[in-house]
Length: 185
Image 1: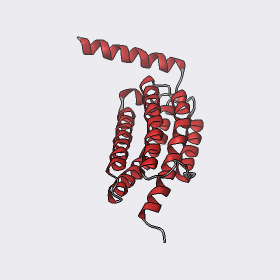
Image 2: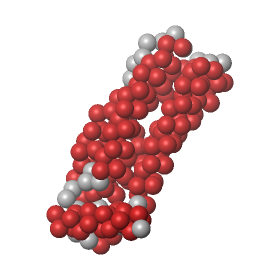
Image 3: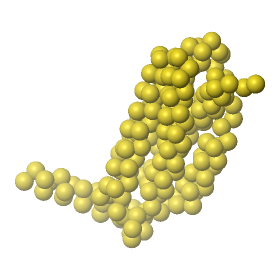
Image 4: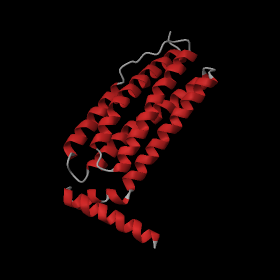
C-alpha cells in the first residue's frame, strides 16, 4: 500500500528531473532572446535553477533518500513545445514573446509542483524540507513575475506589427535612447 510519503518522493524525483532539464534548456533560451533584459532574466534563473537542483538533493537527504530523477514527461513536453515555438518565430519580431510564452508555461508547472510538495513536506512532519521547497516556490514565482513584466514591456510592442530586421533593431535602440533622454529632462 502506497502512502503520501511514497507519492511525495515520486513527485520529488519528477521535479528533480525537471530542474535538471531546465538547467540545460535555459542557456538555449538566453541565446535565442534578442532582448538583453530577457537574456539576463534567463541567465539569472539558470543560476537559481542550478541552486534548485542542490536544494532538492538536500530534501532527498532529509527524507533519508538518495537524490534520483524520474523522467518528467510534462517538462519534456513543455520544452519540446518551447523549442518548436522558438524555431517557428526565430528571426521574427515576436521571438522574445515566443520565448517568454514557453518559459512561463514551464514556470507555471514548477509553481504547481513546488506548491504541492511544500504542503506535503509539512504534512509529513519535515519542516526543514517544507522550508526549502517554499523558498524554491518563491523563486519560481519571482521568475514568473519577471517574465510577465517583460511580456508587457514597451520594447515587446514591436511583436505587434514590425517585422524584425537590423533596421528595426536600430530604430528600437534609438527609441530607447530617446526615452531615457526624455526621462532625464
